[in-house]
Amino acid sequence: MAGFNPKRFFIWLIDGITFMLVCLFLFAALFHTATYINKKSIEKIQPRELSEKLRIEVPQLAEYLENAGKPVAIAFMDFTCHQCQELWPTISRTFEKLKTSYELILVPESADSSTPISKIFIDHNHSLRTILHNPYSPSLVILEPGKSPMMISTIPAIRKWLDSVLRAQKNNQSVTLR
Image (cartoon, rainbow, N blue to C red; front, side, top):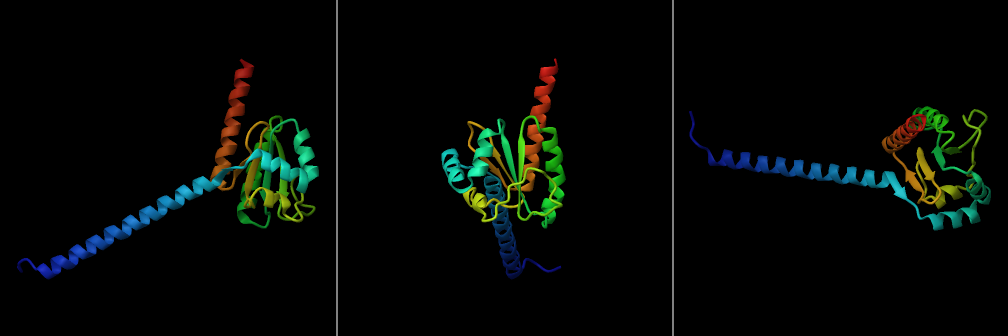
């Protein structure tokens, strides 16, 4: 049995320190990415800025939003995108349940006769996307009277918001029924 080898111990020590530094770097990178994704998934848009730009750039939509009488969700979808195709049935079913509480407007990347909703806004020159700081597809923009508009631009955040609104509506209905 050989004795203590300082050269081998030094190599083992350097390997261990290198491994720990790589792990620390990866952990920091993942944490920073997760924080960035959460921050970017729900963004607040200034209400005055939005309403002024809507009136100028897309007056028909601005007028519709003012006369809706309830909160409006604008869904940006690209039906050539696999994620949008998977998410759309969930959004559609949820807003069917929420039709007394929310209005849903679809803004497809492109529309044809098979686009699955009647309230569609075609954003030909992407002015609405520009006003809303180019939301991704899929994304939801929630416009509620008296509140800052909210952009939700990740699928987990969209699902979380839909679940919370359904739960809130269910709780309100159960209180009303009692």
